[in-house]
Length: 86
Image (tube, rainbow, N blue to C red; front, side, top):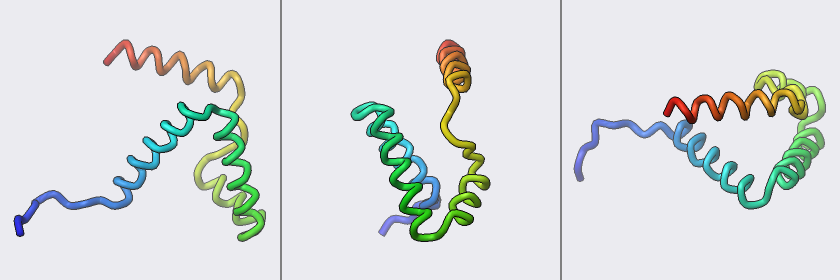
């Protein structure tokens, strides 16, 4: 067996493949689908763990609810700017 000096970071690996899978799902099925599964996930979490737990998770992650139209416009402008830099 060959030794490899690199270490495997499972958390980073899961974040990377999760982000790719989320982006693929969004591209394939659209924002309505993503919103629907997000709401279903929130409802399931609240049913299983309670509203205080859900609010704690959303606060810890910095999630403040549905994104406002202004936020999306700013994200698009920033994305275009960053793409020009690359």
